[in-house]
Image 1 (cartoon, rainbow, N blue to C red):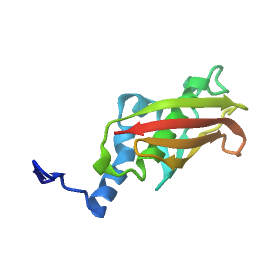
Image 2 (image 1 turned 60 degrees about the horizontal axis):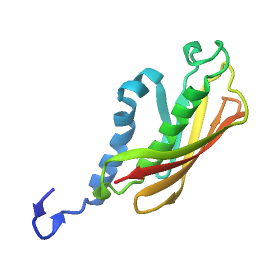
Image 3 (image 1 turned 90 degrees about the horizontal axis):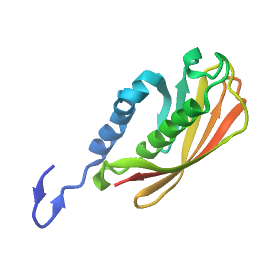
Image 4 (image 1 turned 45 degrees about the vertical axis):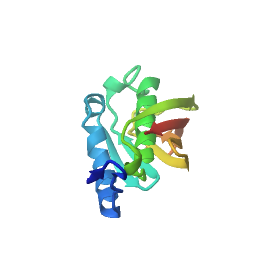
Length: 151
């Protein structure tokens, strides 16, 4: 990007925006924690993401039911990916979850966990997402609201 003292960074064109957005899934999933968790993105569209966590008994409380922290981590990651999926990279690349409220309403037992996230609203810095975690049969295990910030 070219810069001048008076103009600041040149705006990114659509091709650069798309290139950066499409790099997000592999960049996220290569981080130390997520790479050990084993999360994969099955759908990564603007403002909509579906993440799958393959069942492993080491992610459970008892070899059957997922640990709540694992569910929350998968949901947080899906929400973050949704926030990045349609982000204007000219506005910044520093990010974090500001808040997330999780309601556990069921159990995902001996099944892959699917986390479907969608952006509800985009502000200047804050992105609000809604995430639902289900087992493969569609039984809801948890629902979350997330506030994500990118600057």
